[in-house]
Length: 364
Image 1 (cartoon, rainbow, N blue to C red):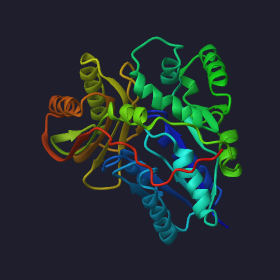
Image 2 (image 1 turned 90 degrees about the vertical axis):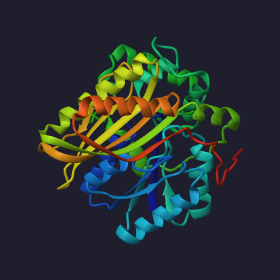
Image 3 (image 1 turned 45 degrees about the horizontal axis):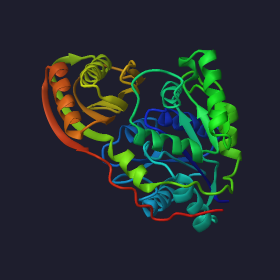
């Protein structure tokens, strides 16, 4: 039987990794083998570290989004097939990517239909971010070209999943549902909370039992799309830290996230997503935090089980800002908080290049 291919999209900070891990755990509990494919513009992904820490087989595609690295996506799937023979592949695309149906899902079905049963395309939204984008909530927002990319993700979705429902009031959720229904009537709307595991079963049933539709390909202005992505600064860093005494790594991560947030907020920089992990030099332990708004609070997504003396910090920061400013802000925050010996092993700061899909299937 062909393996099921599930791709879960959504803008930076929507909660894709948490959702994917929830789905993967459920499938594993049902006796199915699961392979995960992570994706980023650069190396050293927090998402990959979290997936491996959870015990899943993972392949990582870097240097571009799935649409531009389509052959790498197929190769990653084949590598997972050789190593662990998954019944289900779950893929997480870059959070600033759109046009996924035409450039990934349709080509997979058309070229490799004998290998994959392609699931409906889901797009997750953070309800606070989505309210700002749709004009339902005041507050700092992305610029118009970045919002263009965000809205295109919603336009192509077969299922729009309002995640993090535990963080908004019933009235705000009802207002958001109404606005999404009016502006994106092509999509089925679902409400879930991955944190509290509310509403997941009906959505997961669609992903594991439904099939990709045959709707017309949406129009995309690739100049606007490229401009929107290029406004986002990308920073990936790997830093080795050695403290003079045992340190509470979980408290360190939260403190570092708050310090970095405050510095970016003072510079009037809107955070799209900040993800960090801290792993000790010995043992499989891992701590992780996530922050999805400049005016939000960082949340622990994985706790270290014990204090540590030495460890590796990985940082993935996405924000609408000059990458050099992000680099400076990170260096200042780490130096202020760590109070330790610091060795920067990897530091990549850049803006994404113009999307250039390998394939684009135009359906009418």
